Length: 74
Image (cartoon, rainbow, N blue to C red; front, side):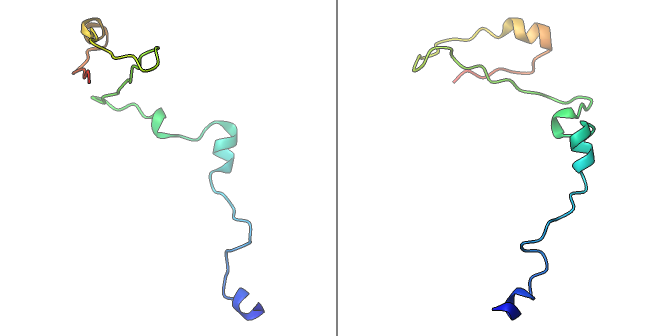
């Protein structure tokens, strides 16, 4: 059993995390932090009423305010 354990070099040992300092200080960059030119973002709007059937959503105001490319109503 002890001979088999010598084969493993990582299992059961602490690993040095290279990004710990950045995460702890808030300097780490995540995908939500990226802002690229021409980038599209999305928003999901859910009904505030459980099991309600949404019949229509007027997205015209959002299209004007946020230069929306499209809207989808299922």
